[in-house]
Length: 92
Image (cartoon, rainbow, N blue to C red; front, side):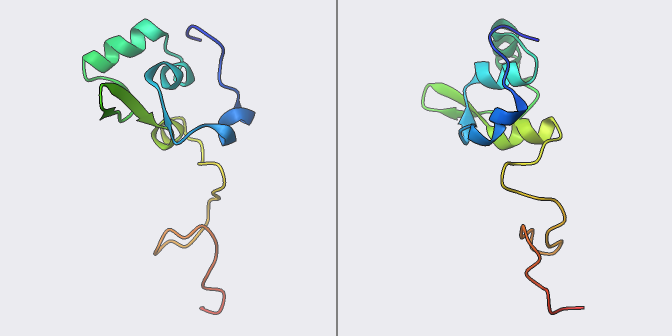
């Protein structure tokens, strides 16, 4: 994997809402130099946003790219409104 320590699966629940480019890159298996090169080329594999002079990467985008659920969510919720649980228990 890229430079620096890896982000472990059990640490996903404690990640902030947005990540810096280096951390997001590490999660994607990219080193610092490659992450910034892809960012400058507009080819970073997940959405990035400008926050002042810094770039931030939404954690949700990285997790979705990796095929992981957001912490605290579960599959199989309401298909009509994207609610996390079954709030239509009385419906058939």
